Image (cartoon, rainbow, N blue to C red):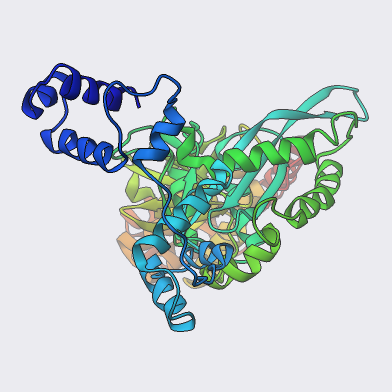
Length: 513
């Protein structure tokens, strides 16, 4: 009103032109002309009456319009507000439906204006329009619970993970011992199970457990959190740093959970995480059943009507948290994870592989392909090895046994078999007998199995049962000469060595075979 009074003063008292008045006041000449016309229609003149205040002046310049005799049906703004959350639904479409039902109703511009005025009366947390099944907002609450170890009395804290759907504000909450990446992933997966479906987008806070490097344009997600999202088939769009309005839904949900869950349990001590979770569940159900203040229904009824039909189904396979880690393959074809060693194919020595670790299994991937899988072990300093990962000579060494060599010797002949048996009976140690037997059996590859069998027959007949003796027989072709007649000349010496060898094994706590 002060500017209108100034327009009238400059034009009527100082007799300035409209262009000069407009330039002086920084307004358009059309505005000056319009104010002068309204003043003339209202019958005003200069000076204005001293008792004319701003309210009376406004009433004279802008008289109220004569109300129409016809009454227009008022739309159900709460219904329109809920329908706008459906995919593809616009105010224009809702206005068309409204006009079909009430032909004498408001026109489009007034319909939209009245809806925006109605929406402005809602709480700030309800002003955003979210499509059904589009977004889920997640964060951890600031307040913590107390968990007391019943054996040691040590006090630990637990945090409340909260997730809310955008369209209905339907809320999930549960307690976790920390705010690690595993707690974020497990909490998000539990929320989807609670919602009985998956939204299109997750909007988490910029916690390090969910976002490695925040960025407004292209944030780098924590790999485990990104894998969790891929498992459920949804995208991750983190809220901007220091922009709480980006996740206003969960901010409001955290506030509600703080008042109706954390505050109610503030004076209780819990002795296990499971006990705390059991106490949270009925309070969470009560929170979702509480009626809205300015909308009909509750979070649960809005979820059943709006969000639940639009959510994607849960994947067939249950989600299991896993860690990803890139490690080199050591020279012994093993990799290390949490101070336990797991074998991989020996061909990958010196290369880098990726570990996918769950609570039960260790999977090893190379170039995107799984190359090994082990049950997870929590024994530090130990190793888990599969025979198929070893080189052939390693497998042969690890499977050494007298039975294996005796069976090999038996394929050559009875004399060779007996000589190998004597090697184990006479030796003072397993390795000594094994190496001697291997040497004798490999002579068959050089001289042929038939000649080896003949050499072993001569060795048994003469008491020359060592590797050097059998090799000398073959090198000097003594195996081609007739065998000596009579008993073994060194039979008593062999029996004596047999007894001495057995005593040696027993003294070492080993078996001679």
